[in-house]
Length: 363
View 1 (cartoon, rainbow, N blue to C red):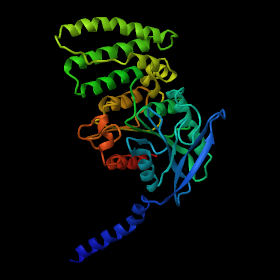
View 2 (view 1 turned 90 degrees about the vertical axis):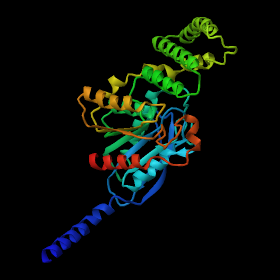
View 3 (view 1 turned 180 degrees about the vertical axis):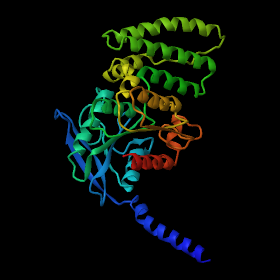
């Protein structure tokens, strides 16, 4: 009996000693509206910095958005995923900076003429700003990127030693060309199109992407794309006649595609080399993807984060495939893009727990 009582007393004492350590994982934080200029002074960035209270030198992370103009809260289909991420991380002791994209909210500049490389530079500008903020450890500032933001943070980390770590959330780790092929095939194959139209979609998409890659640096890109489509259309019309179907409902948006493809963003993106870029990164990386993501294929991109990093000698990489989550890390049923606004749940709490735990242990 006495031995049992001693064990109980020792266990109670152990729990009492542990209590302060557990308590430190929960923090209050305050919010600051911040602004700073780009290195050349042409862009004024504006955003929100959440700073944990009571921490003298906090680890910090900059949130980097994906394709499409987004405000600092990362609002997509009614889901403010960046605001949710920032709240969770700052509650657990991390400083978080989230920004309005170029030409959005209070940030100036022109988004439409910018490239993934420009967004990487924006992220580094934010890192440089944080290095001068009191209460932040200048040697422990990392980047968290969503979707195309995964490519942007990889580019940033490959060119600057100021980036201490990376967190990829549905982040792209494929070449731009491969990403276009895979993303469009996944979306088409998950659609309700009849099989013959799925075949036609994948065929013309693949042909357009291959042509865009080949002529990405050419002034004649738009002309070549239109000619390539015209040749394909003749063959496709002949194919459709063999199906003996009265009406052809298939349309490829050649006009809008060609106009988009000749813009700076697309020319840069289609040439993006993920393998070469990620091999240059030598900091800890955490990459998470949902297995129901139609925009960034989970298994393939996670494998690339690990394999491309290893090729450059970096084995400080952890990858996690989360079941039942779509591109926004929301639980889904149909898991299509059209379902996004109908989902009531917020950003995955499981994913937030993994990110927090990894940052606490590795940074």
